[in-house]
Image (tube, rainbow, N blue to C red; front, side):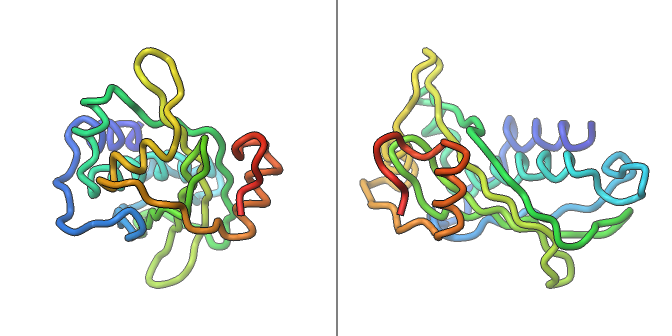
Length: 180
């Protein structure tokens, strides 16, 4: 419940845009582990990481100053696919950071990397394929979203090999083209 409220605040009362923030600049969200985040083994439940990633993506959009632009177009983000790899546990009361950055896009989706760290130590890494929809139910091509947010048409950098392989494996990559 705590993360759901945090997501609602991050979405409906977004933090101010960061001057000069670019699409490829990391957006950092600082959090703390709450009792409601824990599972029976007293470490953060795997599903809570995904909720934290939702918050991080909303803050990423806020840092870019894109909420008003997206709202004007009546576009909104949804997760098409995601994966996460855990390296260390987070436990009650620990502070941690979640860094969100764009790694590339294809015709269908924008790929983000979201990394959790605590005290400079790597905790977990998530990859998200995000799609944008219009309020009329249609899909918005990812290059159109990127152009709106960046303020200009730009080309995607080559996707990291592991992200491209994952995108093909879960069938989220644009049809008829293999991500780099």
